[in-house]
Image (cartoon, rainbow, N blue to C red):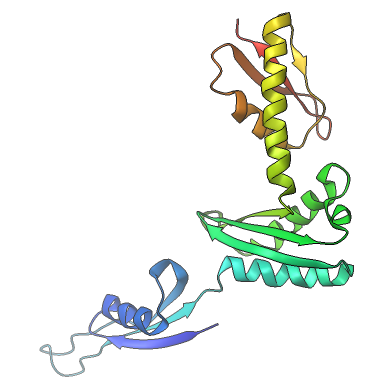
Length: 209
């Protein structure tokens, strides 16, 4: 972690000088005010500048990649981290390689568990406002899965319209259910809701009454 201490006529000026040296933005650092400025007697004697300590935070995408490499190296799976992108509080990672089916697991369960674990590790000690969401994908498995779910949701909504009966989908994870709800939320004839208990909670597609 890079740390600098700077003095300035004011706390703001000291922080600005530290940010310039670190080549960082305000949201990328932690700031500790070590000394408040003092005007001294008659504005001259004992006058003291502000002193701040500014620490550059480790970027979430870098930390996620480091942690993920440490975990995957233990599995002995032949893999490559193809991309790591960070934006709007989300770190998106795509992994490629051989035997990726082992990493995905049955219906994505292994990948979901790894993603959950990564979220717990990266957010340890962070406040609610600082939390980062981690999205792991393997050879665009999630992207393809999401597209498949959206298409299935649209197909089943047409069945509900045609038969005038509720259509109950198979049990899905919260993330998958959210995809279905989102895919149909703008259909004026359809309403969706979830029923049942985890891990057997299902989406029901129904006609609006």
